[in-house]
Image (cartoon, rainbow, N blue to C red; front, side):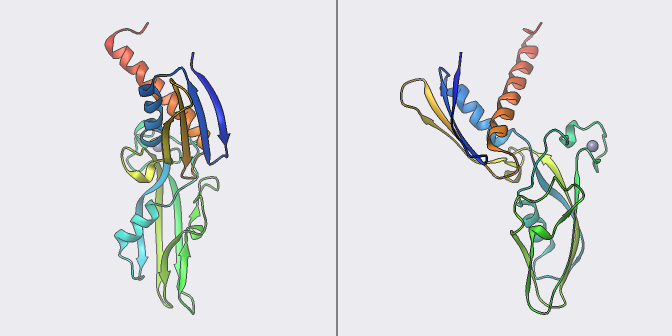
Length: 211
Ligand SMILES: [Zn+2]
């Protein structure tokens, strides 16, 4: 029986002590925290107007890197959504609108200027600079966020840090996970365990061992 002790839980980061567990299993949980647990990120951007100094592609890339608050209960991964629509639906994508105009002096458009159709799904921080606008310049765009996985692109990694270190004695490991802000760190670990279990079950079925 694996013994788990929460050494520290600060919401955005969590440290667990795992006892009576094989290192490879503990490491699999760590890897799932980074690569398998889904999180929300902007993936598709329709630029309607852009007279800023940034190319459309760079602006779209910057939007993709903005950490977004994630709700894993409300939204589906597009490939698992029952809509089957390549453009997505209200259960597998969230629309953000940005409509910014240059002011009298040079101004900075921030992540907080993105208007989301779902108030719960919004940038983790409102003060991430996106682009600077000189007087007369403007940016108008629609951006679609969706769930994705870190193994697909780093922008979907829910955890910025996930490290496994040796504990005080043999067979004891400490797992420290720090969230990018989209999900509470503890939820990332719990989801990682759930997904690992699911994957093992699939292997069991494939081998023909399941009841
Ligand atoms: Zn859908």
